[in-house]
Amino acid sequence: MKKPIKKKKPAYKYHTVMLIDDNELDNFINQKIIESNFFGENIYVNTSGISALEFLKNVLATKNLTDDLLPNVIFIDINMPLMDGFQFVEEYLKLWKNIKNKAKLVILTSSLSADDKNRAAKLGKDILFINKPLNEESLETV
Image (cartoon, rainbow, N blue to C red; front, top):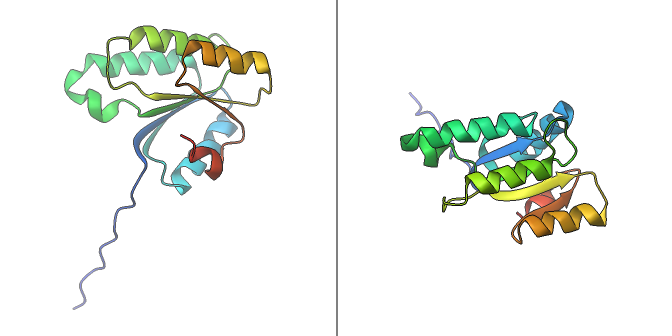
């Protein structure tokens, strides 16, 4: 009897990635791009900054699971209702100011505004600003 062939697990760039965008189609497409490029092994999808913050607060409350559940990279759309991407980043940075394993923050937007790019830079020098659509080339910069 033949032995089953063991599939080698692909090498993912990051353990966990979070997408935050109110457009479900954009989330679906971005998730597929992330999966097909082995960019993130686990992908959390949120349709609002508020739900994403609640999720992250709940993860922090479960200290023994924090390292496994916290995202390594967070992609954030700017233009969302209730809490825009900039407001999410401000709240995230307040929440995480005392935590050493912060996620890489990536503004993923259709905005071509220099003002938006400058505002992102003022929030943090490490925040990346990428224009939609997400693609293999832009993933390489993260």
